[in-house]
Amino acid sequence: MKTALITGASGGIGSAIARKLAGDGYFVILHYHHDTQAEELAKKLHGVAIQADLSDISEIEKMTESVIKTAGHVDVLINNAGISVSGLLTDISPDTRKKIFAVNILAAIECTRLLLPQMIHRKSGNIINISSMWGQVGASCEVDYSATKAAMIGFTKALAQEVAPSQIRVNCVAPGVIRTGMLDCYHAETLQNLAEETPLGRLGTPEDIANAVGFLCSPGADFITGQILGVNGGFVI
Image 1 (tube, rainbow, N blue to C red):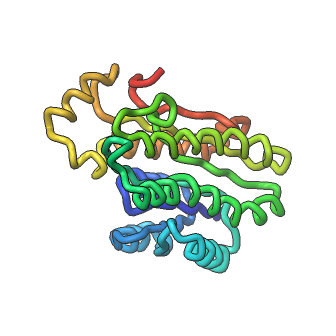
Image 2: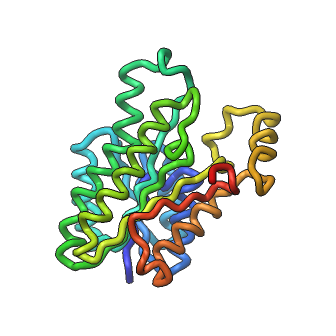
C-alpha cells in the first residue's frame, strides 16, 4: 500500500485531500497543529494523525522521523499547510511575517528535504505543493501570503528539475477562491461578489482541489512534473 503524508490535514482542503487519497487506496498520515479533528478523521480513514508546529524545525524533524518509523517510507508528500493574514504590508508585524513564511514555505522545504533521501533511494516519489492563484498574480492586502505562495511555485519548478533523474515528480496546485474556513472572515456579500467574479460562476470546493491532487497522484500524470495546475474556475488564466 502506498503512503501519503498531508500537512495541514485538519483544514478544509487538507482533509478533503486525505479523504480522496484514502479512497484511492493510500495509507494516509494526517498532520495537524491545533485542530484535533484530524485525529478523528484519521481513525475513519484507517490512517494516522500526527501533531507538529511546522514553524519549529525541530518539530518538523520529529514529525518526519515518526512518519518514517510508522510507515517505513512516504510515496506522496502533500505540502498543504498554510496560514493567511490580511492587512496592509505596513500593518503586519515582523513576528507575524516570520510565522507566515515559516509555515507557508520554509516548512514545505524542510519537510521535503527530510523525506527526499528515502524517495531518492527508492527512485520513486511524488511531491505536490499547494500554492494559490495569489502566488501567480499577487493580492493586495495579502502581500506576505502572496510572496510565500509565489515562492512555492519557484520551489516546485526548481526541485522538479533537480529530482527528475531520481524518477521523483514535483508539481503544484494553485487554488482559486475555495470555500473553506479561511473565508469565514468575509461577509456573505463579499463571497457572492467573488463567486460572480469567477468565470464559472461559483466558489471552489475543497473537493475540487482534492480531485486535482488525486489526478497528479494517478498513473495518468506519470509524465507530468514541474507544472502549476490552476484550479480557480477561470479567475486567473
